[in-house]
Amino acid sequence: MAANRSAAELESFLAERAGHLLATAVLLTGGREAGEDLLQTAVERLLRRWRRFDGDPEAYLRRTLCNLAIDGSRRAGRWRQKERLLRTEPGQSQDATGDVDLRDALVRLLLQLPVRQRAVLVLRYWEQLTDAETAAVLGCAEGTVKSAGSRGLTRMRELANDWTDTAAMCGRNGNG
Amino acid sequence: MMNTDIEDLLREGMERFTGELRAPAGLAYRVARRRRRRLQLRSAAAVAAVLTAGAVALTAAGLPGARDNGVDTTAYVVKRIDTALSAAEPGQIAQLTVTTRGPVLPGGTAVTTSAEEWSYGDQWRSVTYSSAGHPVYDEGLSKSSVYTLVSYVTRTWTRQSGLGPPAATLPVSSPPAGPRGCAPSVAAVPVIFRFGLPGIGLPAGSLLAGSLLAGSLPATVAKALRAAVSCGTLTVAGQQRVDGIEATKLTSRPGSLLSETIWVSPGTYLPVRVVARSAAGLPALSQTADITWLPPTAGNLAKLTVPIPAGFRRVQLPQAVTPILRQLPPGPLPKLPARCLAATRLVPKAPPLLGTAMPAIARVRLSCLITSLPRRG
Image (cartoon, rainbow over all chains, first blue to last red; front, side):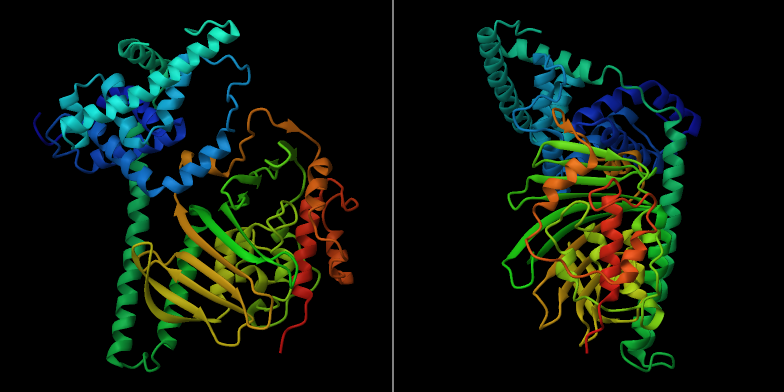
């Protein structure tokens, strides 16, 4: 795309794609407010170079979201760990009804994975990027993406197997 | 279960998790406004940095106005800190990670506690952690003066409105002694260092010297810090690296009852770390507060809200406070001077000890007690 873009162009792009990018940000951070903050920060970076920006703004924002999430997680690791303790009691469902679906459980597990592993799974299965595209966004080798994705899926599968075993014991439908 | 099944389930879970999300309207406008604000703050900080660099250069060059190595620099730096803190309130949220070490009672065994705190305008929140890092208490005051206390010990929570304004705004019957409202009476520190008891232990931010010196509790951390630096007891003691930045270090003068060191960011002049220690001869107490200044975004403001964990039982305030009071060591507490009892009566609907306004009363009484103690030496 040609440089010297207008503010209206940015607004129209965001009107169309911000919802999807917000979802990516929320999956990367684990919360709506944190996701909104992350997206605003990424959009601010885009805004800074918008007039002369020459490229795909969505790809730029996706890459920035991932980098910010990984950097932020490194900086705030200790505090987030504590914050998580405040929100979730061990062995206790957040869902007041106790009716938790395996899909929800998988997303919760996703949010507890190390941020780089989480970013890989979000990019692969939410953004539907290939391993090579994911590697380009994260700035790492394709092999790293494959191994991180595989580790994440292994944990998901373990959870799912436990889940179906428990559901069978309780006579509950594991597929929700 | 097959990988493809897991992938599909994960994809569906993600869709469900984000299904109701809508991007805020006018995102570009919001971001542009946020950027403008940040640039304004940054340019103010840059001007301050340039001015300080000038002041330091003048000092180094021995030019008129900088004759005494340190004194003029201190005055200048203190002024800049004061200005920065003034601008930070209510513009920014102070987030503190606080580690406190001291005996519950004078002569007792030292205990280390840690807490996370946030302070913004009249709102505050404090989470106390056990030595294993688990939350013990989570308490806070909302914008509308609703006090919430969650006890992870008893798995209960309570909420009480109408506790009145924060203790800081309640008048204490007589003004504190000393220059510019600075009355250093830290002998009462063991009383308020009491193991982070909600409603009794004070938000750690208020333990910063400012609150002790100013004669009443600070409504905000920024106010407490302003009081501390404006009392004229700090001297610039060079630069030191704190969390990756070359911070300006200020220390309290020898002979102070409370030995304090404050590190401020050279860019913003906002304090980034405060270490307070009791002077020799007093019970060994120390507190370190690492401070981060956060913009009031929706995500950061949410940190001021006390979350109620699922499965916790709601109880009345007196019921919530009773187990906490039981933790107080046996033996009489220091006798309250008459004027402190009078100050207590200023709390709206002042009830007996375990009445509904217990936290506010406890805070007023303790703040009054601190300022009533005789000056040392």
